[in-house]
Length: 544
Ligand SMILES: O=P(O)(O)OC[C@H]1O[C@](O)(CO)[C@@H](O)[C@@H]1O
Image (spheres, rainbow, N blue to C red):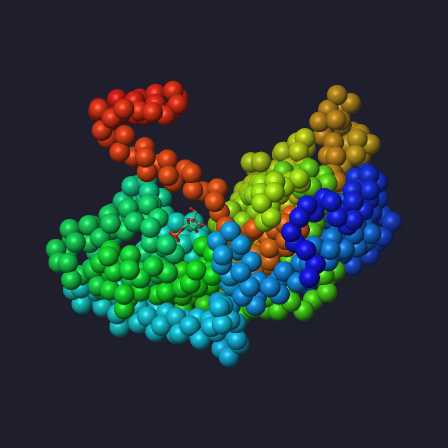
């Protein structure tokens, strides 16, 4: 098997790319398009219903060949096969990585330690569907016999971002007489604002936590429980108003939620890959079991695409490789994701966890330090708002920011000319970024000489455009799985473990130590002088 271990920079494919970069760094998009008038048709690919244009990148057919050779040398296809067949590729935690099994059709066999996991996946999906239907229809009654009107998902990170993002993305497909809220932050304002204007006897809390030990989620869940009991005054109300999604049945039981009302998943589902599991329960209630199945079907299409499509047309692999090209050869530190769809407003935030928690690593799988740069800083907000805020820097700043522009052709609601205006802006931005405006073009407009440089656009700024006809559950599933496998591809290239997250641990441990120090004024502080002083200031501001 080709190796995803070891130093990628030491391999022949990387060295060839390095040599190629010496000339490729000077590529100009204007010249590339002039030299090949069909570039905008040929440097494109499709995956599911996603049309992907990667022509506006600073690369040639040779660059792509060399990048594909890198993917082959690093064993991307073999590593993908290892992942989807349940091998324990999350080596630092000794776990399989099987989010693809969450969307495997009934009857598929995927084994972990000799046990087929697919029947369990469908058992949970069926249980979720039964529950979702009963909440949607009003058959599920609260403590006082009323139907549920508000569903509040309590969770953080992967137990929040996926369902919250997808709920917004699929708003037109949701049952509009139900209200959905997502509480994640340990800031009490989050749970307070989510509960201040609703009726307890019409509210369902879904406590979502893979581990059921996460401080923020447990604090919010306890506050929600106190709020409910304060309103309804009866411990037995908890059974009708709280359900849990977790891998940790004993902790769920200890919290007081009947494990009959628990929807399980497994340690082979990473938090940031978990929303097609029971973590998507709130979303399934919102869009219905059929809508959720469509989402899974969209993901499955991309899983199949990755498994069966040659690397040079394999969309997630290409996106991953193009990302490596900029990150490691051009030194681009950031990657923007700019959805031209208001419904996709939370998609960049969702991708931040998917990408940065997966590939923000400085240690390789083999325990050695990386010698090349790994995951970029991922950020973005919906177009067109960003155009009037930070696009200035993308067009004329000193940093290259490769960007993904995501567009939808047919809106859920056709409102006058809005959609055409929106998409015109998307296309205009990628055109302007790629081709810019030369000083001579500015002069030809009669601009005074002292303003020519200010009004010049250097261009040559790379973008990918992803276009879909409609934002359906299936298309959203395709988008999410495309990015999942893009991140996977990059992790394999860099030789890192994209499925652990040790970097979040230290802060958690220190917060546990500091929390009691904020309330007990007498305690001896043994931190650094900055932290000690901040703690004392805080105590004094709180009158302690
Ligand atoms: O679902 P849990 O166990 O509450 O964890 C929430 C999130 O916390 C993290 O472990 C990071 O702190 C994420 O990986 C995870 O998605």
